[in-house]
Length: 297
Image (cartoon, rainbow, N blue to C red; front, side, top):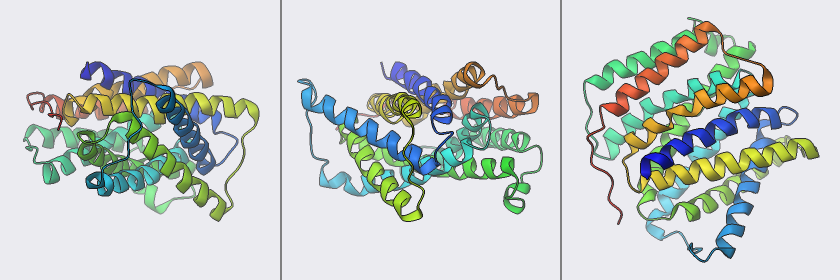
């Protein structure tokens, strides 16, 4: 069942990328992630209060540090990702953010005791080649030509990839001690408070119209709720590498929905870059296929 949950997490995340771009087009990225986190948190809280199978529990003190790291990393990851997605094709953004696996592997090796394999060096180079292709062969422009919309978008997505890698690292440390629903609730409550306070402080908190709010609600349920919940369920029975492998369906599902919603598809070069990134991801996680599942404590 862990593999199924990981696959569903990727599909739900792909749905969020496409619908989020549609629902957040008229408001700031901070406003979008605020309402998305708030709606997801309220839905999760209501479910926990009414469900007889799941209890509303307090996060144990031993997990507070990991929870703080998880939430702070999520804050920067989500903010940067949606800033970037507003500036570029949703499917391309979803492909590019897959570079997070490089940082997940590095953190897992350094702090979780997972082994590093030579095959993964080649995989990381392939991923970097894919990112290079998506940046039109000139990644330097990301840092020296920030007035260019595409360069800004790529820069934001790459920053979010680093933060998402840190987020998943802390997810792994929390998974054995906190039920997925309780983590989703705590995460979204804290994130909505942080995004709301930041939006007010920067003067960027905007209220969406009724139509956009409905789309944001769909995005909130699919992403911060279901995608996160499915992924945390997957981590309780399979290791981080295997769960992340099945999650690579996200950009393809985002591309399908983007075609339907925006009649927008990536260019041939972007498809090439995205395919290289996914290939590198598959090589990395397939090299870890023999890693034993994570035991619950």
